[in-house]
Amino acid sequence: MSVHAAQDAIGRHLTIVRWLMPLALLLAFAGYVGAWVDHKAAGLVITGLDLGEYVKFLTPVRRGEMMLWREGFYLPLLAVSLGASLLAFRAEMRYTWPVRAVLLGLAVVAALNLLPPAWTPARMMTEEFRQQALALLICLTAMAFSPLLALLPRVVTAVLVALLSLSAVIVPVRQFFVILPAVASLYNHPQTPGWGLLLGEASLFALASGAIWFAVCARGVTHVKP
Image (tube, rainbow, N blue to C red; front, side, top):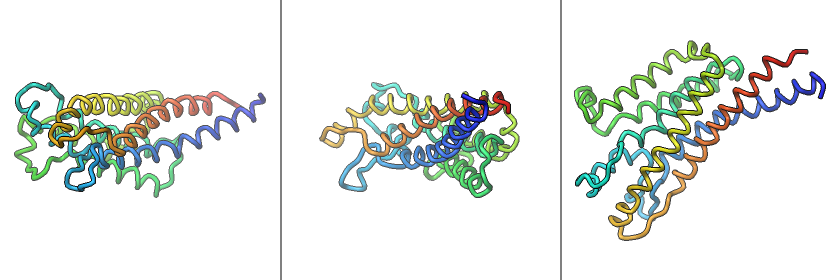
């Protein structure tokens, strides 16, 4: 393959990655706020966003029969917010300002969803919500300094996005299947994962794959010379 052909192939791959990653971020958020436990009655639908609070009221959790990292259910929000901030200003991505505005807006919206219902500043400083408060602070700080984060080495950005995404796939899903029998018992009906979980986790996996692909494609752009 000639140098020019190699450059063209790398450029096409990078173009795919450029649009795959924002789409994956948006779909991951949509899946997270979608139904993880579906039900024909809207009031009985449980979203990924609900689970961080919902699990506190399950009888096995209250009795200490299930050991969960409650904050682990918020990892998709962390992955989406930080991922959007890390990618918005990357020079290799060449995003236009409207795309950057969407990514930064998504970073803020995802971060603010870390706030619990009826929160107050004093409540956020309690032991129960301290991890959420720290995650919120990290996400908003990353968004504010996203142009500087774009100066991180390409591999560092790719590894961070991939690790965040994979953590957000593994931890919440594992815990979801731990609590699913308790939810089924409460509903008095067998439960299966809803569309939100399937969409969100597939999108996060695509985001992790895109981050790896981004590192490889961008490296090719750097090393292939005319």
